Length: 362
Image (cartoon, rainbow, N blue to C red; front, side):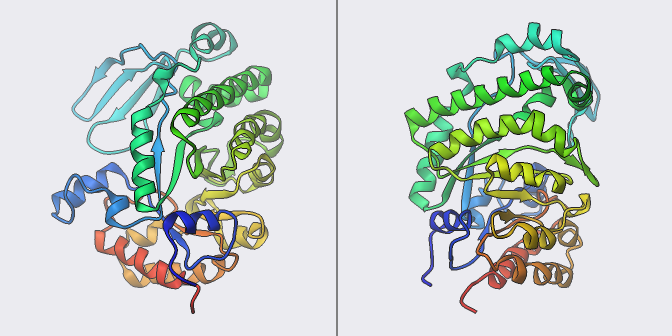
C-alpha cells in the first residue's frame, strides 16, 4: 500500500479499514517541554505535533466555566502552591513548580439547590465560550499538512466534577440521581449547542476527541448500572449529534473503565484512549474482546519509557503492537502524557520503533 496522509490514516483506523501503518500521537506534560528546552534538546517554542510529525492534532475550543465574567480570586499563596476560587465556585490548590492535578479544597455546589441557583442559569451557549480563531487556525493548519483534525474537549462527567467535586457528584449519583441527571443533561445540551454554532460557522472537524476520566486504580468511579442510567444519556446526546455529522468519536478515560466499555460502545464511541496499565487496563485483553468493533489509542506503559532503558521500551512495543495492529485499529500512544523523566531520545526511539513494528508491508 502506498504511504497515506495522517488524515487518511486516522480516518481509516477509526473505521478499522486497511492502512499503511498504525497511527501515532502523544500528549506531553508542560514540565517535559520546559526540561527538554533547558537541556537544549528542543526550543521552548517547539510544536511537538510538527517535531514528531504526528498523524493528528487537536483544538480545545470551548470555555465551559460557569461564570465567564468571574475573575479568579487568590485566597492563599505560598512559595510552592496557590489557592484560588474559580468561576465554577471551586476552591482549588495548584502547584506552581510542576504540573499536577489540583487539590480539591472546597466547592460552592455540594447539592441540588446550589446547582440550580448558582450554576445552572449561567450555562448558556454564549459565543464568548468559543475560541473561533484557535479552531480556525488549527483546522487550516491540519488541512494544509494533511493531518486528521479533532475538536477536543470534556464531556459530561469531566464537566460536572469541576463544579461540585468528585465526592459530592458521586454521593449525588447514589442519593439524588435526578440532580446529577439534570447536570448531565445541561452540560450535554450546552456542548451540542456550542458545537452547532462553531461547526456551522467554521466547518466540521475530521473527528471528535472527548476527555472523560471515569476511573481510578482498579475500578471505575461508578457501577455500570449507574453509568448506564445517569452518564450514558449525556454521552449518547453528544455522540448522536457528532454521528449525525458523520464524525467519529474518540473517548479518553484514565483509570480502570473496562466494566463501563459495553455502555460506552452502546453510547457510540469509535475509539478508546488511553488504556492505563497501572490502573489495571490491559490493551491486548481489550483488543481480543472488542477489536472487531472498537479502535484503540494508547496502552503502552509509560513506566517503561521513563526507565530510559531502550530494551525495556522495545519489549513493551514488541509484546503489544504485532497483536493490536491486526484489525487496522490502533494508534500509538503511551498510557498517559510523557513526563519530564523521559529523555527525548527515548521517546523518539519509542515512536520510531513502534511505527516500524506497526507497518503493514511486512
